Length: 245
Ligand code: ADP
Image (cartoon, rainbow, N blue to C red; front, side):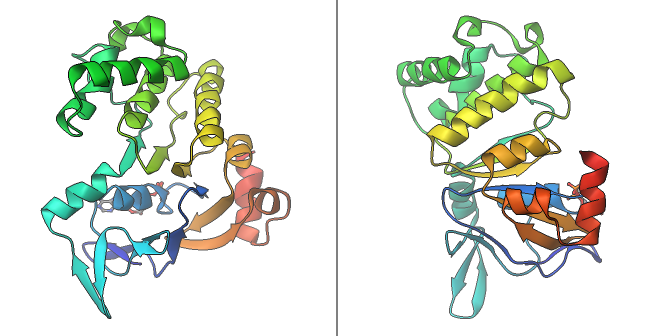
């Protein structure tokens, strides 16, 4: 695949292919293209060439013979429905309480009744340990709690693919663990495909099955976490890991 912004190519001829249910961590220096990949998967950006392969199927385009076909707006929203995203900055709706944050999209996008959506939200709040805060507003919550609500909100849409973009980077250090704990539980107990951008290497090691090292818009190395973290082959990867760990 290929991604350009204007005349600048930011993702160069890379093969991005993920199996269903696979959990992949993207690492690499700032500006290497990790967020752009997530935004492409989420259809917030449009690919300039090639495909994103999910379980052997192109995600954001159709392929007819050798021809690459743009999706219609309706089809793009179908793709987007399959995907949940959690951002660094929580991005909860500030004017809604926790429960409303979680029920909004299931009601308006999936067509659940209010009652169905509330029931689902409560069970997700149980899962992230926040059932008792259903009536709170985002500003009344800690960063760690807000991020756990954001995870519950994403899960409420039953995503096939979950994108996590540096979800602990904005948190005070003592709040990181509670958020990673929730994600470890999601990884262990669902078959959601997860694409993870993180600097938490122990977490990457615990939850992912494959790690991709990005540099300058290319995947320069790809391996199991064990291999990547104990025996990186590429000098660039070795230097990067020495600097972040
Ligand atoms: P990372 O997430 O690894 O820090 P990004 O995907 O954010 O990297 O950025 C990759 C490259 O694409 C960077 O050089 C960045 O400046 C460039 N870039 C990202 N978004 C845009 C944009 N909207 N317009 C122009 N350049 C962009």
